[in-house]
Picture 1 (cartoon, rainbow, N blue to C red):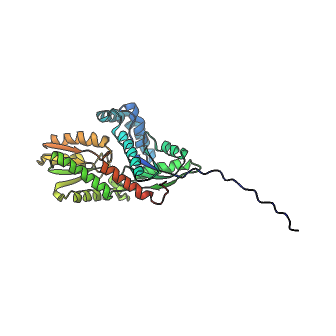
Picture 2 (cartoon, rainbow, N blue to C red):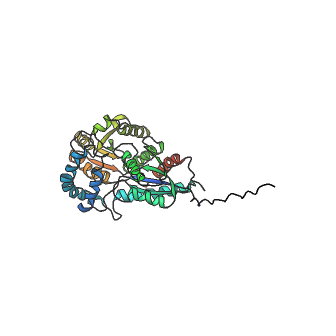
Picture 3 (cartoon, rainbow, N blue to C red):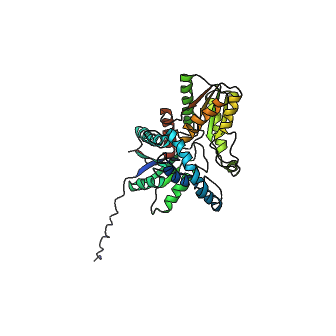
Length: 346
């Protein structure tokens, strides 16, 4: 007789949560309030990042803690106060709105994704947003940054922060990173459309200045592609606007410390143009997708004063892309390409 063989027990696997994909829309960040008390911890986090200040910690931290964080917060707070809005920091408010619009646009295209804004420094903190996504069952995250041009000081710093969070996670999501989109056709077209709209409403300038955030020249010698990518963005935008090389200048702003940074510097260039008798200058900041301290205070206020005070007659700041539909469409296109292959549709 055949020997009876019992059936093996059926092992029930625990239910697996529905696969969910997210986009983490990352920007630099801002203090919580335009006060010295709020600016101090923000600057401590920002300037304490070894990607931002590449000086040996043993030399830099005593300077940061003993001098800069005692003097700079009050000065910076006054600058923030000059641009603060009822919604708070323009950068924070703008970034949150962009995230909402991006999720809506992707949803219209049939993508079932979550879009969360995150700040490298300040709130909403990047690590907190990753925790929230993980708790919500997200297992794929596209890290998309508000830095069209790659730099170790910005792009790589966000990647560092994601990796820092990952080291403490038992089970982490799958990540993809968008390193840059400096030559993306949609991004360049959105910039061009914003310039054309401004010129249609206010006429054309004698010169267009494209001002990018600066970084130390040493970073370029060490292999950072930032300068080359800024130049490429400028060239593509000038070509799209059909500008002769004599009609536009590309400059770098926001120099910090005594080291040599990328040149030409923006403010001396504006003074030079004013002194040379250039009547009207328009300034655009292509590297800043959302208006912030560097655009609204440093360019729209200080830059204006530098140009007019040197003899210039008319100064226009062309606002950042912010919530411009052409920009959100371009941003969604960038996200969509990098989401390819992931299950984002019902």
